[in-house]
Amino acid sequence: MPLIALIALLIAVPILGIVVAWLQLDAAALDLLSQQMQTVLPAYLGTSAWLALAVTIGVVVVGAATAVTVSLFEFRGRRFFQWALLLPMAMPAYVSAYAYTDFLQYSGLLQSSLRQLIPGLRLPEIRSLPGAIFLFIFTLYPYTYLLARNALNERGVHLMEAARLLGTPLAARIRRVALPLARPALMAGAALALMETLADYGVGAYFGLSTFTTGIYKAWLVMDSHMAAAQLASVLLAIVALLLWVERKGQQRLRFSSVRGQRSDAQETRLTALRGGQRLLAWLICGLPIVLGFILPVLILLRLMWSEFLHQSDDPYLNQGVDLLRYAGWAWNSFRFGAIAAILAVAVALALSYVQRTRHLPPVKLWILRLVTRMAAMGYAVPGSVIAVGILLPLAWLQAIAPQNQVGILVTATSLGILYAYLVRFSAVAVQSIEAGYARIPATLDEAARTLGSSGWRIARILHAPLLWRSMATAFLMVFVDVVKELPATLLLRPFNTDTLAVIAHNLARDERLGEAALPALTIVAVGLIPVLLVTKALIRRE
Image 1 (tube, rainbow, N blue to C red):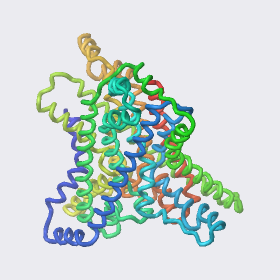
Image 2 (spheres, rainbow, N blue to C red; image 1 turned 45 degrees about the horizontal axis):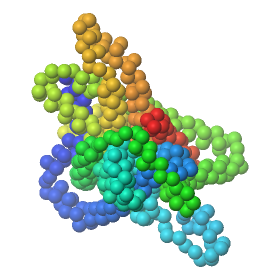
Image 3 (cartoon, one colour; image 1 turned 120 degrees about the vertical axis):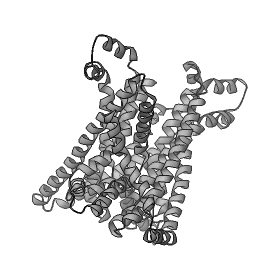
Image 4 (cartoon, rainbow, N blue to C red; image 1 turned 135 degrees about the vertical axis):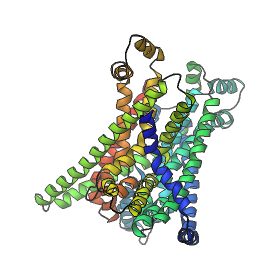
């Protein structure tokens, strides 16, 4: 249990650091809080509220429409759309923002072409709150699509069949049977999409929006106010905790509404053939999100990268050589951080999951173990900027108490701090995968091995490891991909002169060097395809 206690302490420090900041409220802190309430806080609340409301409505509508179309109807191309609708999951919203800005801005390809046909034409500015809402909807709708599709495929099939036999029209069956059954899944998916929206920094910073994440970054690095950053981070943490509670309630309702039917009934319900105009409508419903969320941004980035290559060909040797060397350094930093963080996260997940298999634990130890597991699960929901502030705050307090200590330098001037933030943020991903693997190993195997005199370490090394290698590989890949895409925590905690692909893509796009940002951005997208392909393979295997 000492190891479990250490893991609990490591995971709890960033969150406790934010909470403890409120215990240090003095006159200056209260005055700062009052100033924020009168100046920036209403803008942060207003922008985040509009963003949350619009993204929720958008992801629910798009996710429900696509899930219903591919689950309950038969049309040419349905099997392609079933997995292709997951492709936008590989496209981070901030990468999509860079692509659409180049394409839709006043001097971009689209408006320049349209002005030749309609002189004086000016489209709405993409760098705006509506533009951010558009990007988040078409990059995050797969959360609601995937959960709703599973709910429609596996739950309440006999109710759909009963409604058909009673003569209920198809539209009424969808409205009164299918969608109510999928409602918990839609709610859970919308909560996940909202947590991703609130945690995003790249889109808000690039579009100049006043969100909580951009406010935390400005308060810490621009205003140099630790307390202001802590206050904003605590408000965002409270909002995320509320969303996490809503998501758990949705998952509970999803389990309670689970009613499995026969597979033949599912097939009969699903094979409602569409032809003519109905088939064209189905193609439009399923194809538009794929084009807007993945295909178009990738094509724009490829065009930008090609244009940059042609531009650099004027100085072919020196310029390209330097760029390739710099790109190799950025990629090495991203992959190095991702690999180390993934190994650490898998080790933590193995420790937590193995201890949970131990039977007859004392009540106190069992309570501590459950608390640690819940804290690890919450870490994934906490935005990277909040975790970064939660790490830096205790260091600032320690520096004020003991100016000669070297702990702050050890954390901020080396890779230790950023790896720690990754571990807190993404351990839940590894825990989920490892626990799923352990669920397939009967506990009787452990008891038999102990009866034969094997120690716990020998059981884990010889018995569990060969059976868990797929789960460990999946956990490693998932954490690796998340680390490569992570932006806000990396911006705040990376060592000096240590840029990653996400950071350099953000910095280049911020400086309007979109052609140079295209290559690192496309690399992030390519890495993000790994979990999408894993999910797609799992879905195909199940069907």
